[in-house]
Picture (cartoon, rainbow, N blue to C red):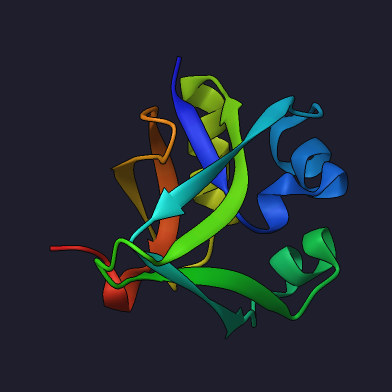
Length: 115
């Protein structure tokens, strides 16, 4: 079962219900070596789902002191595919090791993804 780390709208109950058909149970964790920013969302369906025109986005810095707090969720492969459909092209899904040592998928700024 994959793990998904979210620092943004995938933590919202309304987004989870729309994207996954259920509320996810998450636990706190951090992503290390990334800095938080914002991206303007132009996809009307995503804006309608999240209720927001600007979403958080993280860019890779590689700096050990850069951390972003969020939640990690246990999801199915089908739910991961649903998350891929929800996220806009500004995001790229990558595998990371979280501060807890858990391996998870996370959506990051596609322009600043790690090498």
